[in-house]
Amino acid sequence: MRAALAYALARGEYLRASVQPKTTSNNFMGKDIARSFEKIRSGEQIQIPTFTNVAAAVAAGVTAAKFPRRIIHLSAGGTGAVACLAISDGANWKQVAIGANAI
Image 1 (cartoon, rainbow, N blue to C red):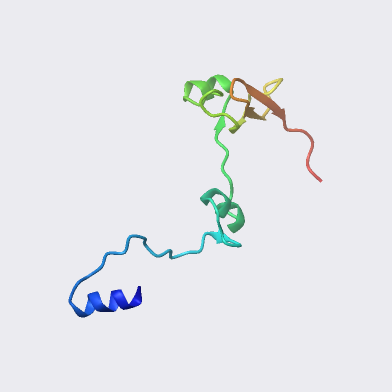
Image 2: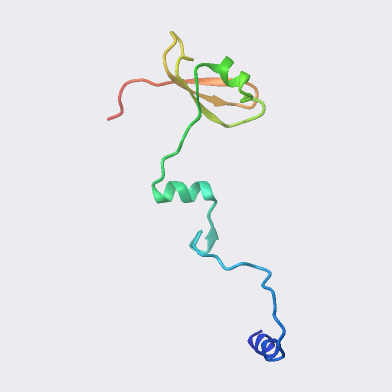
């Protein structure tokens, strides 16, 4: 490969690289890491979308069927209009109550 590159450069030919060199390493133990995992590993904060309730999420186009396995924060969506998390099972939003403080 180096000989071919040197020969081409000596003849005035320019080769275009098909793969751009990576400026940052995004692999761990030889395996590529998705950008979402890079954010977690680097300590960046994960942002969960917030809606008032499920009706507001659906009005914004965030439906359980469209976003399976998605987590959203509902500021007044829980039982008794308290804050909760909701997880999509692909058909419905499942409520996860936010309880006492973690220890």
